[in-house]
Amino acid sequence: MFILDVAATGGIMARNDRDHGGGLDRAIAQYGGDRAGWVDLSTGINPRAFALADLPNDAWTALPDQCADDHLCAAARAFWNVPDGAAILAVPGCSSAIAQIPYLAAPGAVRIPGPTYNEHAASFAAAGWQLNGTDPAQAQVIVHPNNPTGHFHDAAPDAALVVIDESFCDVAPAATMIARATQPGHLVLKSFGKFWGLAGLRLGFVVGDAALVQALKVRLGPWPVSGPALAIGTQALTDRAWADDTRDWLRGQMAALDDVMAPHGAHPMGDVPLFRTYRVDDAAQWQNRLARAHIWSRVFPYDPHWLRLGVPTQAALDRVKAAL
Image (cartoon, rainbow, N blue to C red; front, side, top):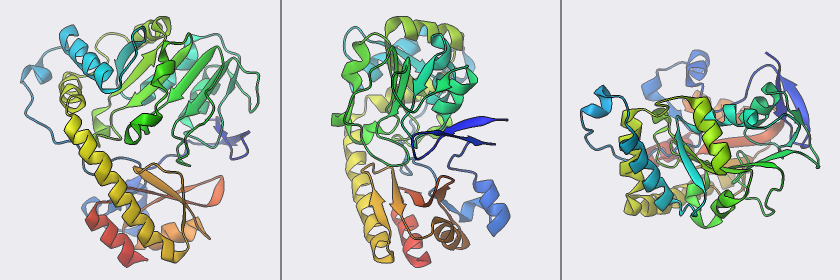
């Protein structure tokens, strides 16, 4: 399959697959061991996940009802201070929305500053859009903060269709662009799996232009979000104390990881404490060294000096230190 990916120069390069974190099964096949013995730091998922409470039995046995969806969206609206006039839609993971959003407008040119999360480029290309590294463009996507650089965007995007992917922004709520969700053509994506550490739940949110949100809702069909996801999401989004404590913990753990990496010549980029991308002398060699200790990291096809590690628990941090 021919996929377009945004290159480090802001242009486009062809790839045969999409580059992501994870893939621990491939690491195990190459380096041995079993899943229980590995530490997976290749993703940006909080390793100290939100603790699940008991769910009502009908969360599993009944079709998800509108009342549960309304409660979840109300909790999300309050948590993210969604402005009046912006619509909100719960979706089965942000990836499902990313795949569908390009079909909400007639294809034209889309600008996606790169390098960044490559599903946006792949989805727009699949929908017939022209990926354009410069303005003018009919659509624009920014990942805020960016993945994998960890940098926040200073300038606000400006196009007929604007997608602001804030999948990692819950670590820095003051930096959000959620206020732009009231502007025509604007959609803000919010991930649940990363900050709350429940990526397997497959839950996300789209906030913005009511007409676009309604069109996306139609494309996703009935009952897009499972009953357990509706219940768990509502619990998590109403627990402000957990969110505040988690932000403090994440920043402390990432600072500790920086302290471990710095003496070995690793230079951190960005400021997102769910992951850190480091500039190193040879990322492939670093990945190999860590993998021999059954620690999985992420490298990038467009820069041989970038190594990304997710935030570690204390036990994982001790293993990284020993491996280096």
